[in-house]
Image 1 (cartoon, rainbow, N blue to C red):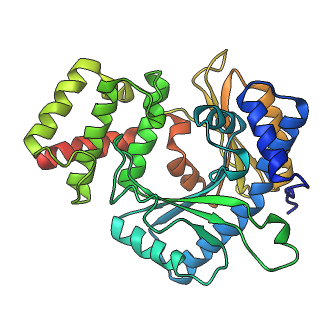
Image 2 (image 1 turned 120 degrees about the vertical axis):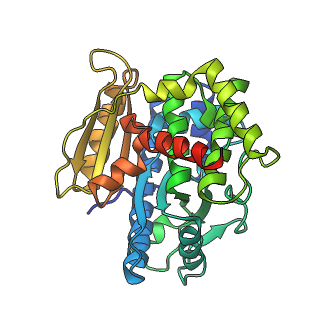
Length: 345
């Protein structure tokens, strides 16, 4: 499999390109730099996901879903514009692997093994820096993110040294909430994921996170000050006012193209306007070069009509679970939420 190398761009050139993109003064050369920089991270993703899968197999751990994704160009641009201090060279989540577990216990055990492994990659920050399970975000987000700088001594891999990757750890419960938020942002025209939504809808999802945390994982979430009765009463009162959860219930899951059995990379297309609005498609690829070429073409062609994302996973079901939001499926969240309310009522 052929991979794109980072190129001979200096950190200064990368950041200058990022700054022009942020200011809307973008030139063709800036897009070329961004695309090369983004594509080069696929090599790092491949290395890390292979290592994570090997660890899962070596210790015979079955209750983990492992998926990978390359950050979309529009999402990179959006992040540059949202975060004034963000530079392109330091953006740590262009490459990402997502691990989804049955329980917090299995999550922590697997993560401890990764943190204590002999791999030479540099773990950025301390172990608790992005621990949103022990310290949930006010929005209700829970999960753990670890950032690594790729580092190997082999001659063939050294040109990718220094590139960053984010490893996300979530339980099924936490993942169902996070993907429901992304779907809700589409349905309700908000940006709760980026802490930019109305006070009521923000509070509603924060309360729902507390319900899930308390009822399934026996731990505090973002609203520990409320007792069970207060928690449910406030949640139901807010939902009766804004009906955000009801909108999720009214969604119909989209069917999507069957994946080729040999495919390991997929382009997911979620149409947001035009004749295909509401439809989802998936295109499978075996080699990264073809996938990235097609991805760039579709991003340019559909930039105002669809969300396009390049992801990878070893099994079809793993892709659907790990990227539920691209298939407009909040069913797991709704099932967990309804049962969770009944558990603590």
